[in-house]
Image (cartoon, rainbow, N blue to C red; front, side):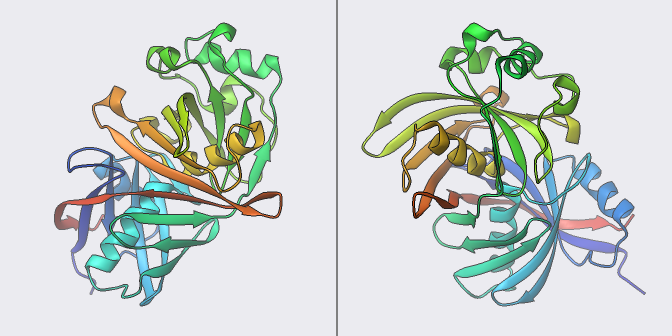
Amino acid sequence: MPAAFLDYDVVDVFADQPFAGNQLAVVHGAADLPDADLLAIAREFNFSETTFPTPLDGARYRVRIFTPGGEIPFAGHPTLGTAWVLHERGNLDQVEVVQECGAGEIGVRLGDVVELSAPPRDLVGPLGDAYVAQLLEALGLGLSDGDGEVWLAGTGLTFVHLPVHDEAVARARVPRRAVHDIADLPDTRDPLEGINLYAVRSRSDDGIDLHSRVFVPGLSVPEDPATGSAAAGLGLALHERGVLEADGRYRISQGSEMGRPSVLAGRVERAGSAVGAVRVAGSVHPIARGQIRRP
């Protein structure tokens, strides 16, 4: 008979210190549970994401990722947090590991910070003014707030990457409708569920500093404090706009509007004249460990 309780870890990801960044629950030993039970556990934690990993060997694991609204094929902070937890528990003993998820294989490097590497999967745009106006209106903004081309881009989970002037980022409101209810956007390979509203704050020899907010209302995540999947797609969008060179670096500040300040470090890697992969890195902090009842 299976145990009545499952072990779990809670970590904060993309945080400079504990009790910041994005919360993640990693639940162990749940491979035999049906989807409805996994969703029930995710809703019980009610974080942006909860993961259910299955270690395969010391350098590879399989994971399922759930928001309170359902399963998704890929997400950034769950990738970093899950790999870190499995390494801390002794399930992974290598520095370079591979995560198997709905979007395929994602490379992860463990160290003082944890870094994922994901290949480009979606890049569509730039969107026309009619699309942009609908998206801005849903955020309580106008066309005058826009500050560049809008692209759909992602590495396993796709986002609308919507650039605005910096003061408009904090002024934006959380949209009440899912992305596809706001505008009839072009088709993408991966699920398109979120809006990444961002502003370029400064540029230097060290890279680009950005301010971002991410909204995923269609997956029961009205606003997310730190979104690695959006950060990865943003690297593609910035490169396509000509704002970021191949092999360029960028740093994202996110979550301050929610009281969960987060820092995400990204870089794009060249493959000929295009982007071959996007890397996104951040810190992970342990917060809690315990048991949760099986549904």
